[in-house]
Image 1: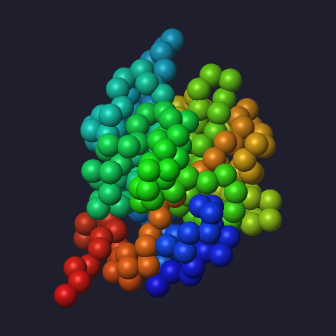
Image 2 (image 1 turned 180 degrees about the horizontal axis):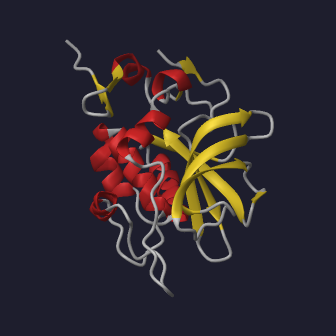
Length: 224
């Protein structure tokens, strides 16, 4: 059962559960390693970027979630990880999450206004492992997944991101773990953080979710 969020980002709605990190996301790093999602590289093609990936299986999975050659791919990487991690959300994610980090945040915000709170968008409150950060750059946006909270007071976090590199750019050539300060309105490298979204598990979902080691995904146990 999840701890109720007393300072949640959606106006105090008691249905929003602050999920225990150790319960839901204790598998995320090993999951990324097992799936091969933690260390992907772009193909090197002189004068061109985002043309494809060294790992052909990974490239096929990225194309399956909507990525096309020459497109920036950080948002598609997040989408792929979420679909693989939460297979029960495949249809929702396929419909509502795409290749633009900023548009994805807007999509979740608009869905929240309409009453769909499977995922919730927020700009303040306590960050958690598994939260998706969204940032804007001079040209376009960038996004990634929080995998560790290093300092709650300063929102200093470790992230996993696609289309980046050691300079923390949003136009790199690899998947990489980085460390960032993630506060809305503040700079993080060459970008500015604009918001976050996360999976909003209900108390009922919290009581039946488990990680299926065979399928390498979270599943809901059938209620008998």
